[in-house]
Length: 389
Image 1 (cartoon, rainbow, N blue to C red):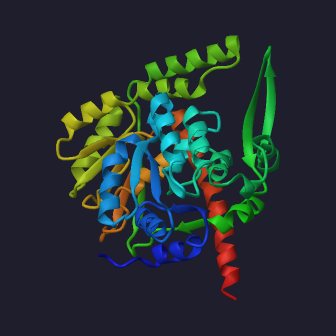
Image 2: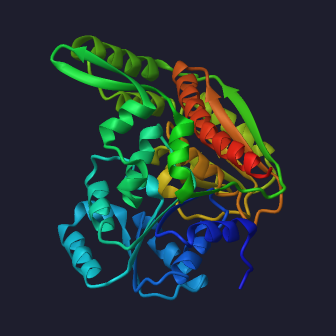
């Protein structure tokens, strides 16, 4: 068997003495192997893995590959929302074991404190003797993503209710529009203090391969923006008359309107023809995927999120981000499909950017999430630096 990496050994050393912990290890650093070693070193008599449904088979192969010893069961987190029978069955199964080890892979799947899946994972976790969460990027939208993940591990870590977490770590603004009241998250605050609370239970690992990640930004002109402007006008009118609108849904409609624009496709044509190596193209929409598969038969065209979970594609060296995503975690996950253990050459990312305001808005949103995650990492680095002396 392949020897443990330095990061894996450090993760095991830090968390093996604890009953709860988080492996916030970037994709490609081997967090599943570290989890298996932690489980094998415990006194558990049953392991329950909650994973994204589409990764169940790949996850099982990893467990077999790394030699998991205890009895285990793997279930999709989405299934917990859809099946009362499954939920009750898992409750009954957990109660018939003494030292249950519960692992939530891709723990951002339980970031919504109000979702049924989150509620059920939390309730199952209360019966587990050991609890572990795995994720490459613990924050997708804002710092509120962390609360359910840490609460699953133990309410004692934060020792505060959700509303108290809001007040302490989020700068927000409450707005009233007619009879409707809603809250907007403006910024995150007190991040070093938050990190100090969770740090004893968290192991973080960056992927360092000794190769370069090159980011290239390529502009294109949308030839036919009429549908975009129409969708934008529709959104503005709804805001004027209704006040509250589904902003994400409306912007998705705007973005979709120029997905297969001739200017967009022409720029991608030029880029694909220039690249000599095998190339992945990331898209958001299924009709776009179908068109690009026909247009570029030698490329691998896949969607963000579900379309890329669990894929190891180290044989590819180039990724074209044909369309942008609002979700920072999805973007990072997409990048890590080729930048991971087993990659021996430099990788190249190409971001296509249209000449429309929405494109800049998405980039700005991603940059803010990057800044928040960087603040967490900087806090971590300062602590590591101090501990060296």
